[in-house]
Image: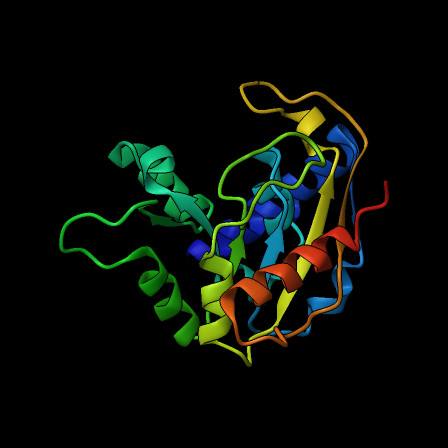
Length: 207
């Protein structure tokens, strides 16, 4: 049931809306469509980013690909948490581990071990348009734990003008998602992996 809902929402409704009404384009997305598992790693300027990335996925990829989001924001009540997990397929995590529950990176690692994919914003939160913030170490740890896993860098440009942080209604503006080639981390050290991922993202930035 959820697979059908995700396909209708993102491929039949959201993608045409994003493309023809808001002005978003996807560049190079076909390169990763044959991959069953990956981590899409992108810069983050707008809530539109997640919708646009989900809209790039095939029917087979949609059900097993999970955006990673903070439970304090998207799970602050049961209704919002259900909407996030069912219609966005989100994995809600705690930004800081407290109590006896599973740690955020353990939850994500377990999903990867099951063959699932992730949409991951290593900056952690929305920043200024086209300005890359410092990375949290999570993506480096996950790629260190899963060295055989491909990550796909995606540079997102323009969505911060369509729906900037603090805005409630989107406005049309030319925006592009530029997908890099799927690749594996070469380094084994977490900080070095972070540098690899950051350089891969910045290499896709056009201006």
